[in-house]
Image 1 (tube, helix red, strand yellow):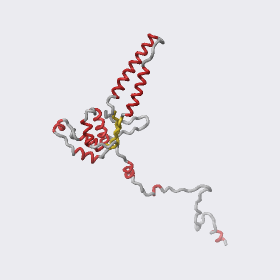
Image 2: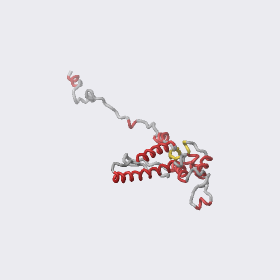
Image 3: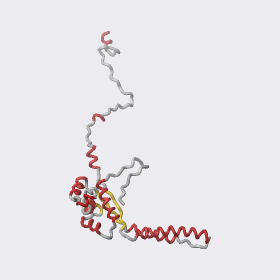
Length: 219
């Protein structure tokens, strides 16, 4: 009888298994399996899927006279304001401002100029395609003397055509632009530099809202 009492739950009894610990009421035990999870994702595959080709856009004023007219009106407006100020001092109330009339004309012309602007967007063709294009337009003797790595006559229209995204431009059209008297050197250079920038530069990303990303000067 004594033996039965000894083996029936006496603490510390060598023959008795210890009682399992239990969580307090209301506490749920959680197990972190994060380290045991297999890595099903491929970070580089995700990056490759998200990457988009670099694009660069430029605006060209199609009305060659409107820009000059705007600059003239700006000069007239500045002079009119100076004259109005002089007249106000000398004539008192017996004078009429001329600046508002010129300012109205400038506003109307500026609004019109927005309707005659064309936007050209160029997209990168990729490193391999770009290098093949450079190799297919090798520099001539004059280009080599100038230090150019491509043919300065045939490569620019080829790159403009190949990189054009919106609108699409053919090689013949790009060549026509470069040879047309209606397109000046600066305008042609804008198109070529935009196409070149799309294929050879990477935009800087600002680290914060106070930082400014570097812009490509294509003027």
